[in-house]
Amino acid sequence: MSNVNKSIRIPLSILDLATVREGKSIADTYANSLKLAQLAEQLGYKRYWLAEHHNMESIASAATSVLIGYIAQGTKTIRVGSGGIMLPNHAPLVIAEQFGTLATLYPGRIDLGLGRAPGTDQLTSMALRRDRYAAYDFPEQVKELLTYFSANNRTSKIRAIPGEGLDIPVWILGSSTDSAYLAAAMGLPYAFASHFAPAHLMEALQIYRNNFKPSVYLQQPYTMAAINVIAAGTTEEAVYLGTSFQQLFAGVIRGNPKPLPMPVDNINSAVSPLEEAAIQQMLTYSFRGDQELIKEKLNAFIYATKVDELMIVSHVYDQEAKRKSYELIMNV
Image 1 (cartoon, rainbow, N blue to C red):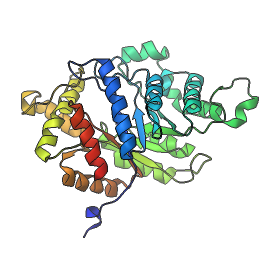
Image 2 (cartoon, rainbow, N blue to C red):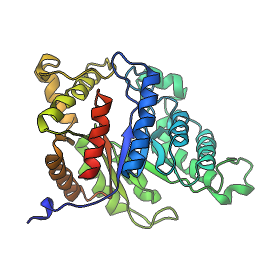
Image 3 (cartoon, rainbow, N blue to C red):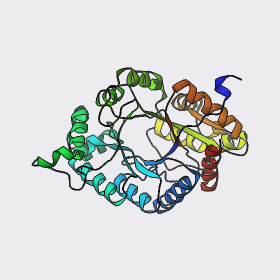
Image 4 (cartoon, rainbow, N blue to C red):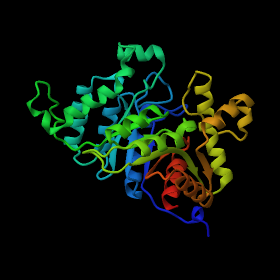
């Protein structure tokens, strides 16, 4: 038997974009996110992360820190965090205080993933940041944030209270190779957004591992990759359920993202051949199938990438089918 066919076990986590469904309210989205987080905790998922996006009808996680608190309050053991906070949108001191508060309320359970991108369009980015060049200072902003978390900062004139001296794991997130160099140089764990930006996954992982420098935060490289996965009783059903997120990505390509639509019997009726080709490229690391097929695909992905952890994204309209998908994935 080849190695790729052997079942292997690494931690599984969930990335929830707080996706708004067509015809449903944002309040429905939040209630479903909490229900999914509670199920994930029962099933043994390690982390439940939420991502900062702005000015999008399809995503309701703009106030990411607030939503993290809501999920953490409704669960008991699962780690809850950001995948991620777009740091150039914020003053590092504010994020240190927010996550210091969360880590004080929910000790040992809060993660802070940091991204460089705005998580929105250019006009909204300007409204958020005021400084159009903020992203260029991302490495310095990360260092500033880590300083606020350090117990050694107690003699500084500027302190994060709460936040100072707390154990809040900081991750660097990436969708290209730039952040791989930064995560390696700072000795921080690295998570790659291969669920929508697959092109540089392998190169970024290699850069991170080859350049990693041990730090007070991490002695060995630690990697996580986000991928789209939908599992169902049959592969046909999983493919059908997946037409919702294909339509969602088509909206992104058109520059007009809308709430997650219901699935369709024939994806060609909803997207053009050109759009479908672009979607397939974006969704290179997207797997749909029954339990056995998903097992085969995940094992192959883990062996190819050698990641330490997987973060699963699942855009499914029917919430019962979505929860069933996560159950099947964990049982793999």
